[in-house]
Image 1: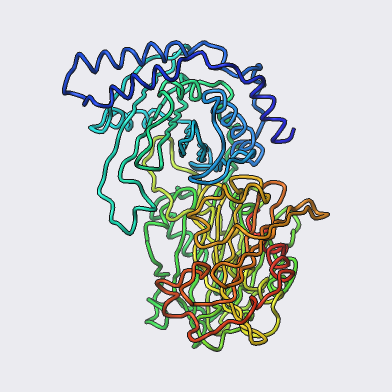
Image 2: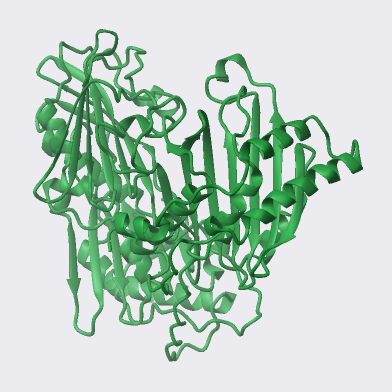
Length: 640
């Protein structure tokens, strides 16, 4: 079933609102002049009036989906699961606010919902978070929804927030299915520096509803204005049906995987088990390089055992890590990071796939060995742009080897070295070492260490290598320069957004630009919907100009924009997969001029960005080359 079919099936006929919204809003605006605690009787009367309106919402036709909710069969955290929840949320919001129109602040109204969805939580306890922008009766709003499966603690944590000093009304009630419900409406005021007034309002009006369902699911829906002059155009009671909607539900947790039998006698998360893994790794390395020796730091004194950063990471039960332990083989130094992940399939799947084109493709292989073990071996590219002699990417001596075992365990070995102390083949053999296995979990109820870092994403070097190799392929001559601007953050599905700033100088032309890679964009892109893109994510990007759109034979959408702001020329290209995985590439012809089209040059960029580069009449890449870069298979498929 497509996303559109999901949405149509859930929303059915949009019912006429049964609430006199103007009357309720008027009452709430009068209540705004009150302050909690200033007049108990008056406030109680206001809350009672709101509860009457709220109660009238529950049980009415628009409080539940128009059609029976089918059984949930999607897998928690999958794209299909996000599509299902997102369609249900959008349908519920549309029923709750019939005059809702999709738009960002001051942007045009679009037909496509502008709602971004993502997975939150961790393996075994996955939740949902979504956010979007829309307009109701001429007022621009932003909303967010979070759903967590084990919500008792979240409910307790929200207890003190609902009736804060900023609240002009708040209360609790019980839903028709036994749900515990809290609601509030608040007004926040703050001093805003003049230079930030176009980015944040001095006054915000918000409304929020939280619900704890009988099965323990916790839902938190919030809504706020984005300009100081606006008041909320809806009653807080209109939000309650959204968190009660039976279609807005997480997928059931899968049955737990039976624990595999193990001959390991230590217990995961203990110092004894950490010592066992240290010994196993040391033996495996010395079988490959007999003169292997641990050192206290890079080039430091010899050490009998590995000395890594963050020793507590070795005590993690489900993802122990030995982080950046220094070593030497003869007189060549290096560092090794070893991580084991008990439920390794999600981590393996969230990683950027092996490139299929250009330089990076020659240094990544995936093999399947007898017994079902899969091995992914990468030779990373050099640190690009950090020195004048790195104007073109090349293969480095750093290796990332991943072994996904038949039992689901992932062994991840990362070796960094200036000169090759260990070869790629030697590193692969170490990662496949049979004694590098996880110990059984401790008994239930035992206090254990949390994650050190997030094992679902640790691929920044891999992703940067794919991006720079794609740029190298599109612009094989002249000078290219690329640095990461926003790298991946961890999560159950890995990184959701990556961005890179780059510069190209060739043939008497020069320009700087930005590459943005999104795993799941907030909306389906077209010339009509570009105005609804989040401005903060696309700061300085010109999305108005000569726009064309098309669909490629592979199903990917292409939107191109040619803009000419303030005498400069800017090419922008979006390529979007059917599942909304999206790449944007923008480049201008005026590098480092202070123009709006300049990419950010603060912090590290200020120090390392090439100086004195001048542009020409057009960007240094043609529109066709920019399109080829955005559509490059190693970029468009970078975040699976």
